Length: 108
Length: 113
Image (cartoon, rainbow over all chains, first blue to last red; front, side, top):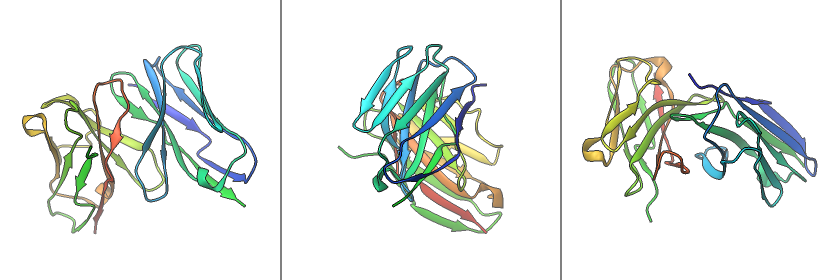
């Protein structure tokens, strides 16, 4: 069955630095979605990528979908304390399957 | 527009007891998902409804878990009898179509003692 894997599991970032989290699927995806879960909260949709090689930006966040539609990345520039939380990618095959998430902590 | 609502927000039960979780999806959303997240781990898929039909229940751990979606509206997830390893946060999510964004409820934190 479809498996979605994310690395790293934890990311401890100095405020102002950049970082990237990666997502890989065992199968080709029809689309990929990214969600953010703040501590104690619930996952909230960030963005969806559909096309091969697609790149989308949301302010300091850049999302990319791989050419083979089996991997994706989220790059955050100039990390802020508001970026704290767990970022999940979710692949759409026949169901919406989530990766394990990257939990981000920020030191001021 | 009301979001996805889940009840209860917290539940503490003893091993062997029964618990029923409820999810009210966004009105008009045919797709309803149940997920479970154990502390610090992945959001694990449990099952997917399209209207009242179970589209995929491959993630249901065992026959102690029973999900229903009466009339294609709200859904319930019953755990009977509960075991210690069933503890975690159960999320419900709904979406308009199979490929659009999913809206999550606040989750039910289940603790089995």
